[in-house]
Length: 335
Image (cartoon, rainbow, N blue to C red):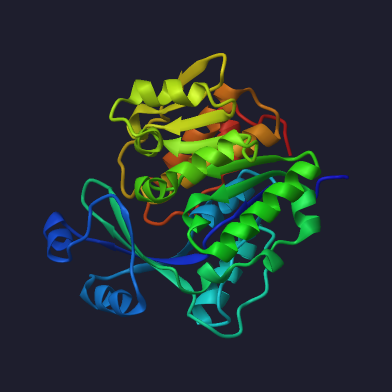
């Protein structure tokens, strides 16, 4: 069938509440720098009260990736759940305004729309404290068969592997995508997420559910239970999937069974906030794949998108990424 979308992402629908802070505040609040911690609604309210002035923007890892893909001029969609409340309506508006196809029904009752309280230290590192709320209530009924069949790539967010119903929604999307001859990608999302589901994530690669795996080097080491990056990369080479492994300022590896490409990071003058860097790297890489670029140029496009996002607060592009890509000699002549 003709493809109506290039990339469809599934993930947590979250609104980000971002504030600058320092190491002392992280210690006082007993949060682990650089990680994502799940919190309940009471803790969410307590943390919000203690934070400094905040910037509120729509986020969520998979949704950020979809927004980045759209900014590159590539057709994207998102599946994720919000409540019919002010925050949920704000999320839906922002996503559609970014050019992303989003038509999942609002939840009429239950927990509030999810929020992630993101604390950014002077080095640009972000520490996330996330109240998942309504986004945990994604079910297989929210996964539209025709939308999945009409998407060349389906991208799954590892953060959403926790709720059983959402896990079944993922499995439904994988089945429909592969029946239609489409490709499926998973991002590992976070080392703590990998620690919880290591065997299941490995199983998804080994039972043929996944064609592409996105991870940063720390998540990959967690996946294979090793402190040695080379050991983790060697293990990934044996899995028979396309591996995309980011290394922050050191760039990324693109890993196939036959070879590994090291691709340098796109230069930036100053890092303001690393929130969403991995999400936007995935956006650029998937956009490149959808336009049939070679793997190194896909990684270059990912690095370019990530470079834009870390120069400002928030995980959605503030510039037209397609223009950036054309200036860099990527996506030339493509619409």
